[in-house]
Image 1 (tube, rainbow, N blue to C red):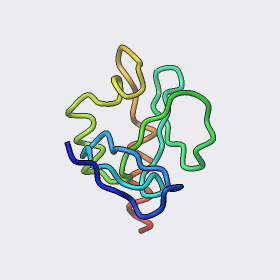
Image 2 (cartoon, one colour):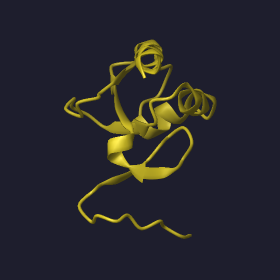
Image 3 (cartoon, one colour):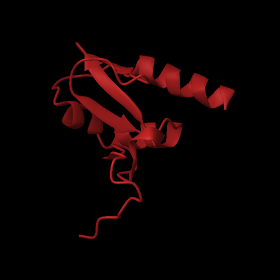
Length: 95
């Protein structure tokens, strides 16, 4: 398995749970589970285990289809992603 090298050693690399591409963490949105709700964490300050996602509707739908949120956040049962969907939709409108 070939791992892509990143120019700066200090820049963290994360994997998008939607498209599974490894990119700089600065390009991704961190999300966390609070109870059974998946919430965006754009400031990367919320406590708990985080998962990383491109803030696009395409990657969001891929993550939902693959059921990646539960695995990445290590939460079982139904997760409410409506807050995350709202964030991604509104972010896309302002871009």
